[in-house]
Length: 196
Length: 301
Image (cartoon, rainbow over all chains, first blue to last red; front, side):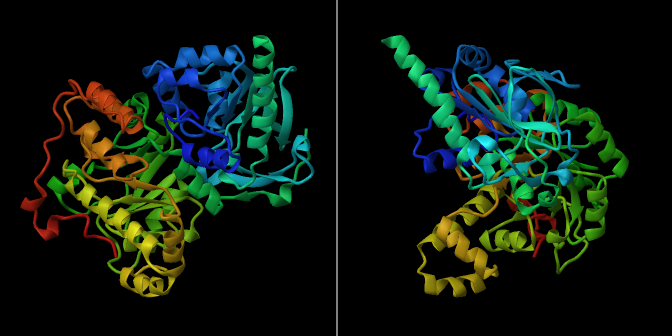
């Protein structure tokens, strides 16, 4: 769990419900001790600056580029994006999307809605959008797991999972479980295979 | 692509309001009076800015009635930064709050720093789409404000003093109040709600969870990275810095150091490093030299 700033607690609560051990990462050295990372919602400009100031940006970017499973929510999605419209701010540029920040408007336009995520079963997922970004362009090889009003809101590209909404603010742990079982599970299997 | 479910879309829910407060955790919210200061704050890594006419230290010196900032100024600040913009309304001044909501500010601080417009009643914050933050000195005051609809609480401290002593007093009072509730048997909770002057349901919730139902931040007198670290270790989940930044000798450097301190609040080595060579902090006031009429924290009911 990247714990520089943002909705860290809520993700940790979710992981503890799923009995997944979790480390709050604030220092470069801690990156060596994790099998996957969640980049939470918060202020993407703040988290980006702190990543650079505390020398986490390059090593983390390198780890993700080499297959470390990552789940980015909201600000986390922005930090992974290849292109951020209108802003010159740090991002890993590993997820092949173009994203517009605060694209629904100011806080009073924040909303929640039921969305359907076919991979996670029939039951709708209550998605909480807070000053959310909109994914305006997406590469063909990036898989759209869910959309809302014509824009992708939950996407996957190999070891990267990203949502423009906040699953950690609900009691529905299906996306976190999907991340743990699928992305992290596949990664660990691959590592074990390489070792043998 | 999945189908649309329009009927289910709901704006400005309680979860949206508290959710924004969650996103600000571990961060620093800075008072600014101009677009230029807002940019310095954003550059330093602030998670939000508070748009103000005058910082509390100036309100204290200049006196007079302190009101909501000029909408023109708020607009300029909104245009200058991409991070959330907050603004203050006077206690009980729901018309100022309506105007701030119309301006599209991201959070309203119903604040004791401005001159109260109503000496009996606060704004009914449930009526608004925009989330509110309110100050408190103890648990009862915090729960009254949450009962009225505040989506974030900040302990008051003494704004514009550059002295952290009141912030500590108020944070300790809130945390002690919660620890006490957690240990009370159920049959004592109603009487405790009466003593606190707080809604019974919220008293029961805190007794069972041991924490406030909304994020709990700290404000009023934070002037150094060490002050920010102190408040976070005492239980604050983020800090507001008012006069402490733009009344210091080198605002950009100090702002950045306080942002770093909010992240590494429990790491003394990092704190030692980031506290070096920041120039002069704001001068500050010994609270014991102030008489009761000069204390801002006593405003609020």
